[in-house]
Image 1: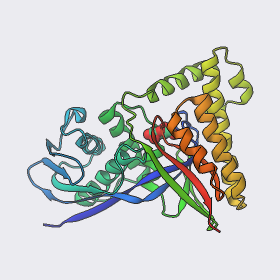
Image 2 (image 1 turned 90 degrees about the vertical axis):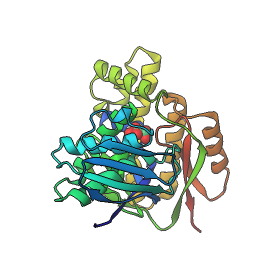
Image 3 (image 1 turned 30 degrees about the vertical axis):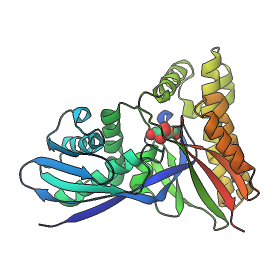
Image 4 (image 1 turned 45 degrees about the vertical axis):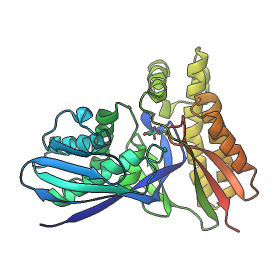
Length: 323
Ligand code: GLA
């Protein structure tokens, strides 16, 4: 019996939130904290997974068709990934595995995407041959997330986790899924602070996705839209949403340019501006997150701070001057 052990990290987004599901730009980075999956292949076509951090053991067939009915709830992400890889032609097997993580669960650091990618890496190692590339794996994980949770998420979390390199941010164009690694200068530290537990299931996340679909019906692809296009919308809510997405895509471009000339003051300024846009125009922040950002900004070595990820709770991220 060969025991296989794989890992997948969490992620924090430095800038570019609520842009991925309209094919925009994002700049996340992988965290040190990670999910570990360890186990072995079996012959009976059944999956048995347990978690050291969450209750219960899940038992379901490898040819599972309804991952969203698997119990306990956390195992739906595993089941969703098993189903997606099977649909991609991975041959049926059984396996037994246990999962541990030092990622906080439901804190906006993509613990679910980490579980999906860990499952994908585990299956790739257990079943082999290694035919599924990282981008295909990330797309499968995104579909698994849609099925398991019903949240119509974009590709940022899964792709960042699948391709990210420690110590660098990953610039992703969510339209064509091109990515490149952007090294952060040694002069800063990235500081992630937990604010509140949350889940995007049943949150206003899907309302924001629906708003963007409506905007695109009216003015065409948001990734190509200008401020003039955004301001041409008659509906005040849609106008604010569009203004955020258009300005956020530009902030990601500007942030990468600032990082590449080591202008961390400018990068920090853009992060804070991104927070204000998410809070006022996109309305995905909360009073507690706003408060956490203001508290961080009051510290002398903090160059910029913002909410990170889907919002409605979760974490805030800041950059600090190291000296
Ligand atoms: C969540 C989603 C991502 C992305 C962010 C907001 O993390 O899973 O796809 O939309 O929210 O940027």
